[in-house]
Image (tube, rainbow, N blue to C red; front, side, top):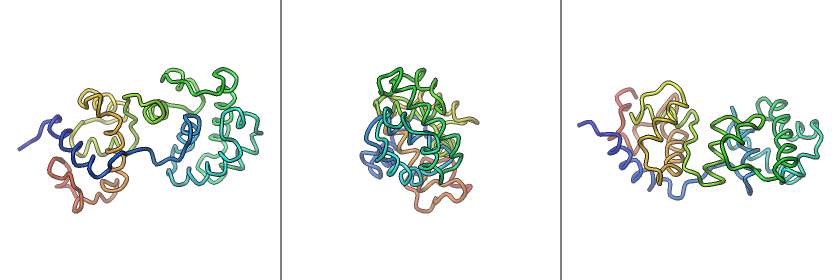
Length: 212
């Protein structure tokens, strides 16, 4: 019997909610600014890599004001081990300078303002809005996009399409946690190359198991 999207969402909320109680970002941060910087750095990199880098970076520059005063070469030195380090260093330095000059060091709370910052696209803006400001938005990375399509919640080709379709079917009160459920499930169980269907708790509502 084929389940509706609503039935799947109810089931996933119950099962993945039990598996990942009180879910949150695996990036380490103490402020919206630190989350923004970490998320910019996390593009094409793992949260683990980012956390190693930011542990040292945030000791020296914990806020926009202090980071904005750094020289570019100093910032590059902190982030050198990450993919696209030069470009990311330029972006986080410029973001810090803009925040210090225009926003009194604070991170803006609208998508439009966030997306106007260097290195900040829709997904990064949504991560900050969701995790730092508790807004009901759906950041869609490769994990969320893959899991949503495999399970059959959506049938989409692009992450932004996935975001729009998920926002139509997931109750607003569940959106923030549901993002984490899908992301964590994709990171640890429904992996890209070798999904672990044999230990997956949600195969009964998934359209993908026959392909494993």
